[in-house]
Image 1 (cartoon, rainbow, N blue to C red):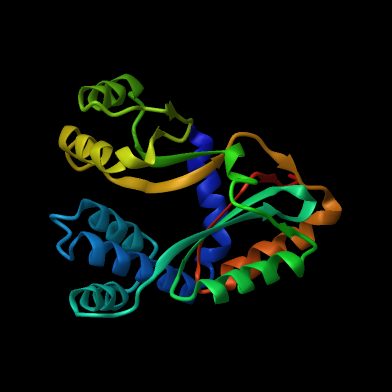
Image 2 (cartoon, rainbow, N blue to C red; image 1 turned 45 degrees about the vertical axis):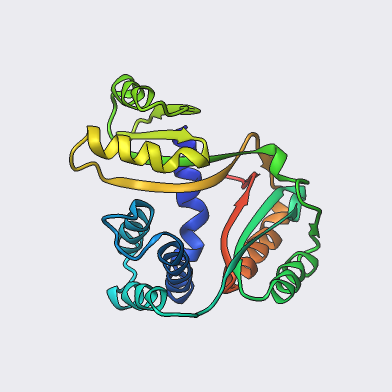
Length: 241
């Protein structure tokens, strides 16, 4: 399970270098989370976790406040989730998650990323069946049994739990139990600091990318990350070491 945390860190590395993209992504997520669950972080733990992650990625406070103010007002933009699946360079499987106010525009933009890199966008389910859909928590710790006991007492279905050599503990639970797991962990371990608290698609296997496909693969990921509507990109690609 340590791989889940590391894979997500690696996949975000490129996006983290694109400051404006990071700010836009968090701005949209915070806005939607606050609009649907309330703008008070003390009563909306999902929002609180999202704001904490944004601060860790050095998203300016004015970006967070603007998103919250926007959610408090009437009307505003209406973003909806959209997911696209397909095969990227080297025939790796890819899932692209978006928040969009114009599905036709977003589909066209994402499809162009596929076609311009000799990739193929597919139908829903073409790739996701080869991924585990899970809420992932990562935090400092090594006592797997103690964490497992806490979650079981809270009636949380733990999919996987693992401590890694870096002193990080990773926990996977079903996406619909993310909130329940977060509350249980916060109540049991005072001052717990989540390095990760988000829903992901984790590949069940890996598709090795040949040396000749690496440049095209990097171009493909960069093109997707550049799109404002794209929130997350998940892939089973394994690049050469």
